[in-house]
Length: 145
Image 1 (cartoon, rainbow, N blue to C red):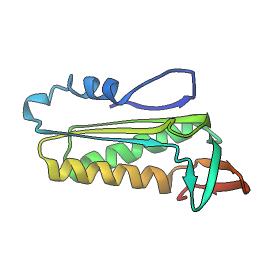
Image 2 (image 1 turned 30 degrees about the horizontal axis):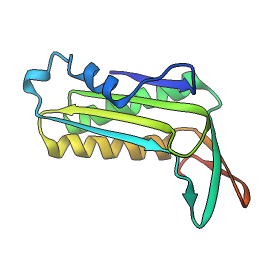
Image 3 (image 1 turned 180 degrees about the vertical axis):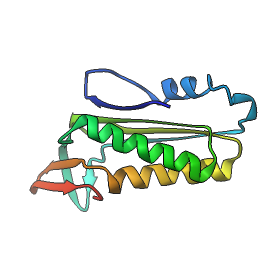
């Protein structure tokens, strides 16, 4: 399991890195599915032009622990073998990667369910703050937005 909160430009981890890592799992022989998600910055949002997004969290260690707990819970719920999550914080522009998730499981149904559940729970249950700077000003979005 990889769970990391990374300041933009501190380290670059890509979906391909996470895939390579989960393929090293001792459960690879029992696996039949890898599902991935890469969340990126959208440049157009509700009719406005987004110039940049600033993403922060008040406590990186707590946020990491919260995501680790979600990952462990989702692994048990769906019976998947590995889940890796990387969430970037900092200042971002259109097309920049913000959020990476990779799930390794025995079958597609539970692997896809685990992917979706992980994405939604991190989005809604973890304390992130987004400041969306657009042609209409600044909009602050807290967890769940």
